[in-house]
Image (cartoon, rainbow, N blue to C red; front, side):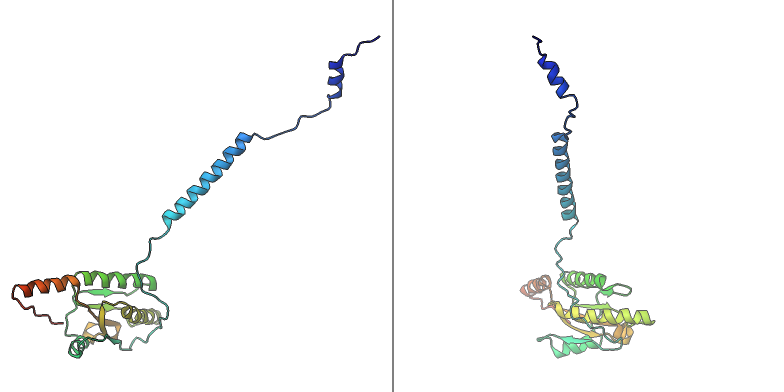
Length: 204
């Protein structure tokens, strides 16, 4: 009786079998981690690049381009007629000037807001904003837009009490006199002077 070599039979039966291929689970996990890290880093960079909250409340919605020769005029309730008349006549010296020539709308929006806020903090009352009225066709188009923006924006700022297009010697209809509300700092200074028996002379 022949003895059967079981090991040899098994080896012969399995000789044409090819082992299954597989990918390393460790590599897959590492790739997943790398993807997650990359995604997280991307979100962090995007958050860091996001602009801070815009405190500028000035809006360009509803702005209408205005003719370069149009006279701008605005007065809030409570402003004395005599004060407004002097403003129109250019009798209040401009304590500071903002020139918007060659600025685009967004740059002008930022400059007007920051300028008015800053001069008010400094206690200034009368300033000049130059928006231009245009010489060439391109300048005229830009100036008419900026003029419309200035007229629109100054009305939105509560600290602006009145404004009026300037006299020819100060830029005419290409500039505007702006009268600002008295700052709290200035009011406090006046109160202190009054408490010492000195009555301040306020031209505005």
